[in-house]
Image (cartoon, rainbow, N blue to C red; front, top):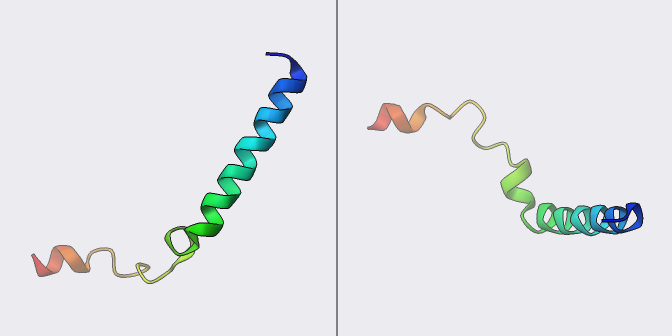
Length: 44
């Protein structure tokens, strides 16, 4: 690959990643699980 092609690929991958993070924002940034990770093991 040429350096120009690598730059284009990097930009495309960055844009795709940004779209996924924005679309699934709750999965990446929610905080409901903080402090409750072991709750499921206690119920079992």
